[in-house]
Image: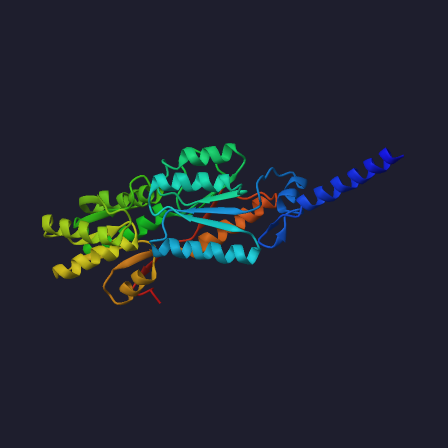
Length: 320
């Protein structure tokens, strides 16, 4: 009889203990009834803690700060945990960042690659471990992921170069300042630029400034020394365009500068008539869209493989 009573006590104790283990909280909410469980009920295969990881290329760029802020706001509104890591434009560090997020058992990884090729092995490993992956602004080359969210960089650059051609005239000498080598935005914006420039303009040089303002100024200073009759510049982002603008202003030359991203500083420069144009993306909208897609995936819903975010050309006439 004593043995039967003891067995019953042990059984009750084990049940209580197991119930306690299921009450681990994420951001103050019980994980016992997590979205992971509901996804399984709906036929999904989402694993992990229910948290979302955001591996961003750099927070030393206003565009990606806006993207991150959009993601933060959307995650807070949705009541999900968001873990953001900043690679500082270092591809090797971003690989480590992604590995760290996977080790933290995130359910969805949102990655904004520094280098679309370099990040591929780490993303592939994450996918093989059951992590759902969304790319934002830039693609991950050679890996099948769940969703890609990006502006139409080719079309944006094409529009910008068409406008630059209107300003400087066909056959004019222009320079291209490129972004980080290997980044999909660099590849796509370069493609859009050359679709027009190779037919209508004289491209005297294409040099990288790694999406960095200081480097953009240095590159432009060097270009001005070797190309005295330059008429225009297309930079793959506004930070480089603004750096180039500083060099142009110091030189006293009349050179049209066109950028890409429509950051606050760039739009102000366009309004002031200092910069010719920029292409407006919606980085905050990208961040919001990425979180929305991640939450839908966690909830076992189907998301589109590609979600485009509209771009527009911003000139002095349209800046308001």
